[in-house]
Length: 318
View 1 (tube, helix red, strand yellow):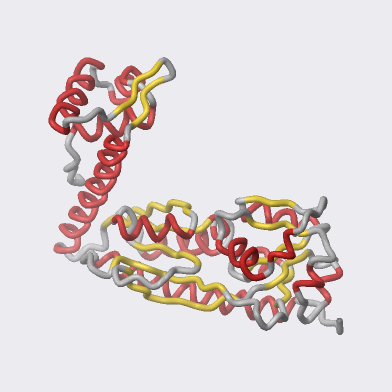
View 2 (cartoon, helix red, strand yellow):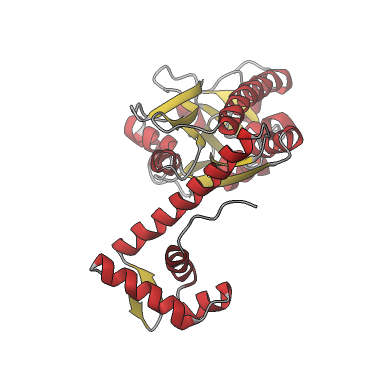
């Protein structure tokens, strides 16, 4: 059986933080509420500070409480890695790994990767968490993710970039949209159509605001969202276009429901997509195998997207 090394007190704190009350945690864990209360009280006395703010609306973690919850997550991940290492000593591909990914990948590359991984590593437990690019990097640095597939990763001595590719900026549209017949398009030409924009939590929006602020003049037909899934569905619907990368819209390009047209402006800088791990943390052998597999699979997937896009796009002069 897997090794369980997370102290009970931390598990109780985590559960109360998630459910908002000691009584709810008691029912969920099957532990007496008084026992949970005593453990939390003892931890608060040891720390010399409250771990929860108590109100009629429930219990919310303080800054100190959040530190305890994060430590619980790290401890659980370390426990899983230790168990994986013991299994590897027996020559078995057993283990657990956690992958950080972006919202735009969940209907594209990630399901395909997980399906093939499950076939070749049937005894490996995979956990996937969807993050913003900044959160993905933070999760690797904090040790709560073994690796991440993230956009626009900035240089950092504590990160090891295992694979990376440039992603040119493009305008995506439905196949029957006028943009779909173009070989390339300028940003000024994109602005003639209703556009779905990412909000400021995403790097593309921040880049466009910095270098092409004029795109964001008040326009009643503009839609703004933090969901790349919604952005893609609005483009598929046929009226709107969006400015994004071919990797963001990979599944839709391969299915033919979206066409990717490169932006022709010379100052439209490309994004990047990278596979990253922690540079200073020793990875288990199974994590190394899966990291190598991820790099090979994502590289092949991007090649397929680019080949499919060039084969299916209608060609016409602007």
